[in-house]
Image (cartoon, rainbow, N blue to C red; front, side):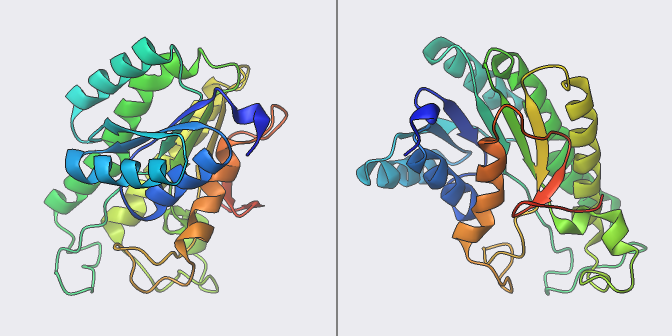
Amino acid sequence: MSEENKGRVALVTGANRGIGLETVKQLAQQGMHVLLGARDQAKGSEAAKKLKSEGLDVEFILLDVDDAKTHAQAAKAIEEKFGKLDVLINNAGIMLDEKGSGGFAPPSKTSAAIFRKTFDTNFFNTVALTQTLLPLIKKSPAGRIVFLSSGLGSLTLHSDPKSPIYNYKVPAYDISKTALNGYGVHLAYELKDTPIKVNVAHPGSVVTDMNANGNLEVDEGAKTSVDLATLPNNGYTGKFIHLGKELPW
């Protein structure tokens, strides 16, 4: 446990399972008070209860990225209880399989409905939540914002025939993460003269409910987000990172 993290408050979205849950656990192990954000009250409360039973400083907060009412309610609750937010990890996201067969439709056949639904969660509503919580992050002496993206959002890697993802295209998901990467760059620029660091994380190919064929365990998948959430005051901002290494946009 790090003494320097005592008194720091972190919020992780989509955190009742997988990478999000592990991120909550690792931040709490470093001494932060962590708000476990989830849209399902029963599942979120149960996940927080389990971590609390392990002696970790975790509490559940109702937060559905796709429900703006919960954004406002969460912001009000955080302001009233803590007066600030030190860390926001935008972990929640979706990958929709239009075919339902594990084989994703090519870009010429991916429906507008799938694009819209994916962008709503992975981009538009994530941006909206960040904007709602930013006034609280500005009250932190060392605010940190992390967007959980994917290497699949890298245009450089997608256009390189030698890259490991060249033959793996999931249009709606990939492009929504490209857009999120762009927002991270722009927000980092806006906040460059403040103490706030804004960075984008690629967790790696992690074994989760969304990715049964991953090659990393969830503890490794959470590590990049945790590292970016705990950057020192002289740390970088506006970068796309995986396990300490910078990725191409």
